[in-house]
Image (tube, rainbow, N blue to C red; front, side, top):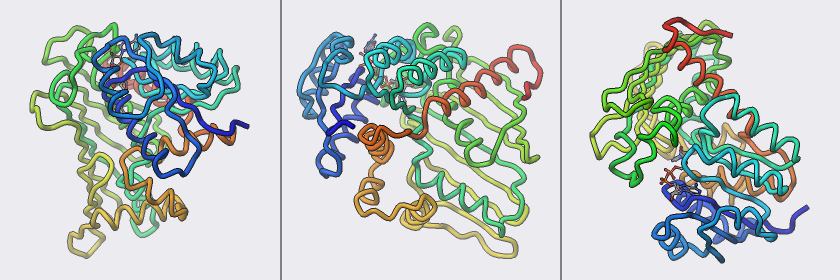
Length: 358
Ligand SMILES: NC(=O)c1ccc[n+]([C@@H]2O[C@H](COP(=O)([O-])OP(=O)(O)OC[C@H]3O[C@@H](n4cnc5c(N)ncnc54)[C@H](O)[C@@H]3O)[C@@H](O)[C@H]2O)c1
């Protein structure tokens, strides 16, 4: 078993910076033996900015240098989606654990090949489906499943974001099909389809339409999806990119159960409104939601509780812990493959103008 986790990072952009922050928090709190060993990005400005801001020990313009660094035992792949597959496969071939950002690839078929590569190499793997670590989602999931809620009937899920080539995003690749694969459904709402199935159970049919108002070829900026679950529950998802610069990434979700109503308007941390049969509308505060999510997830360790207060950190902490223990990490690439299958089915439904089921 490795004595320490020695991280290599490929892609020093937005999410590469976020992971540097998460990993630095873990390092500073000394909860795991961790080194920020090597980072690579072909863009000199971003590379310089990241290595100045965080304690990366070495830097390179060449991603292969990170993969081949003999001290690196875990590689974070944080590049535009088009490059995930070759870097994941190269890292797995060198026996390195891999954390890859979502979407893993453009299609479920490619994601399956990536799963096969990491499984055959026997390396720890995890995908950045970070919402699963979010307090609001964990709290909502546990409340919907309470017997007092009665059976879940329907969910209205809205995901909106400024077209991610502006605002907080200072790169243009999400408007180019050859780099992003597709638009809002693959790039952003893969999270939503994953989280819906995680909260409400197996999806057995989707029907979707897509549109492109901003005119980037192959990049839909509006998707509407009708979802049916095996339980009989239904959901509607609207995923939209717009030009309201200050709206970075927002999700509003309402769930109607037989005897309860729940609503959140949050990404990760936030409040939760609810109404049980014959009672007035109440709000769980940020702290109450956070405490409920800890309880739901069985988190009692004081270090974990502290890390859980910072967006995304627990996700990286669990990956690092799995690498050290040579154990299974969650969510692994198999979870990503299923999310890709859901996304693929939506695109197929939109193309063929018919529902797609399993
Ligand atoms: N989990 C999440 O919530 C989340 C959030 C944001 C982004 N992402 C995903 O992370 C990935 C990166 O997104 P981002 O927002 O950080 O993009 P970004 O444009 O901010 O950063 C990407 C970086 O990769 C570098 N790069 C480009 N081509 C490269 C190559 N061939 N090899 C190595 N590096 C290269 C760029 O110079 C840039 O610094 C995408 O797949 C995106 O979908 C996930």
